[in-house]
Length: 430
Image (tube, rainbow, N blue to C red):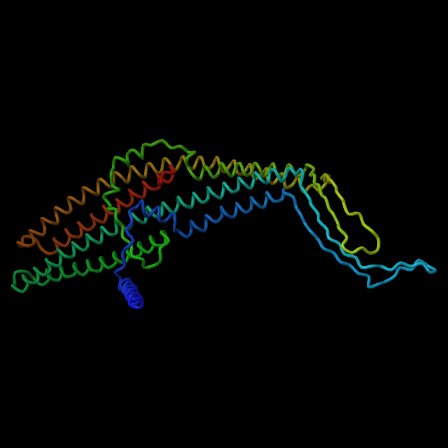
């Protein structure tokens, strides 16, 4: 009975493997929001960046440990190989073997650099966390734009497929008319060339779509070839009301991740200046040691020793002052860079809002152009069927329609990318 169950399970597993290998594996279906969430968990670049936080945590632990008691044990054994010390005459002392067990404890009582250094390491950890946030934000932006690119490319593929199907019907109709002697051979050739161009354009667009899907897989942390399906439609993201509100929204510079990082770097550099200032201050250490003689030999020793040491820096050849001056200069550079970033972010706000408004106007224009070009093409198809226009006129109308569709699709992508870069500036990429 057990053997039969085992065979059935084995057959089911093999069947599942063959099903997956045959290309019928269930695709990973993702909305844009789900794609972003998936990337935040599986993107390899982000995972590598997050390890910096763990590294900083270990560095903080290392800094703390320097101020904790340091305990060491030792076990010594020494021998003089039975040698005797001769004091002249008949006076001599035989040197006995000697072994001992020792324990020493040292404790840092005061060191200004250690105290400031501990605070500095915690700020450095905050810098690492903010850098991870910036990396995550960049990945979100990339996922947004790639998702949009795939949607607009899919739209172009569908348009070319429909257009190719219509033109193929017209070509078949034209060939029948040519055989009947109602149209010239050049009309049939013109339609045939147009159909061939459409096929080439469709193949090229399908390859572009595959490339974009591969890029999306990398951003999501998926293996190459993993079936992927995007569930959101392009029209979902083309609501103009939200875009107009975004273009008129006030910019809070403190919400920008790059600016937040600069503020933290400023705090970090201030601590670095304080760290070098404390290099001029004394430090105090305490130590205690105990030695137990396991085997006594020769002269005795004092088992207990304790000491308190104050180390006072007096002169280091101007090295400490040079290091302090370097940190002060670096702090001044940080302040200048912060001011420069403020100017750049305000300039970006104006530019991105300008880009979004222009993209929105162009989108509305191209949307109207597509509607007009589609009406013209449909009218020309009907006229061609009844023989009132030539194949050249129909081909030109078809090219105009495809150009209008291409311009509209490009305007959609430009509009969505303009929205994304403004959302990134506002730190609102959810």
